[in-house]
Image 1: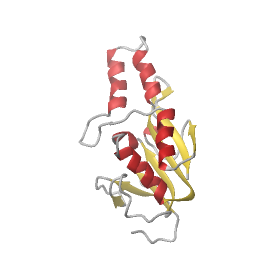
Image 2: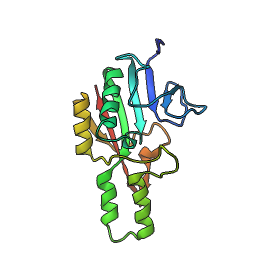
Image 3: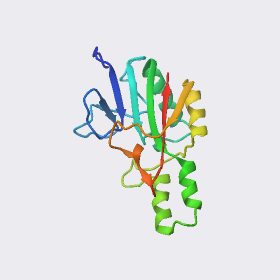
Image 4: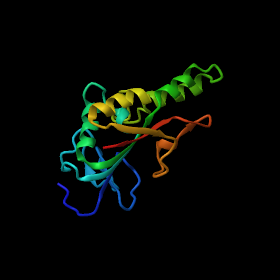
Length: 177
């Protein structure tokens, strides 16, 4: 359990250590502060986190139970007014690339990897595709009533700023408890 009096700001699945932020990840690495899964944040009390950042994490969860559970956990640990910043591959944008005849098979395979994950290890598989509308339903179910799309967070060097052919491929959303 955390007992610090400083505001707790969690970077879920993060790889970049930064002052003022703690990293939670399923895999132990030198920069990771907490080992765990985003579907079980029981090591954090209710309303104990001021901010959560999750860059390309939630698409690795199944939509039947894991995604719902993870978003409910994020909502539970956030303080009233707390912010969830999340980025996921934008399925709508990626589908447009797949359907555009100007891209050859190599380019489309690259897009396919963004849809289904790079599959470089046991965790690098995507189990759900999300658009703003679909993500909004999951956020509402978890208790978030206010959310909005933004172009970029500009907070960490991660996938939320990735582009393909000069166009952003990340659906970046700020949700408030």
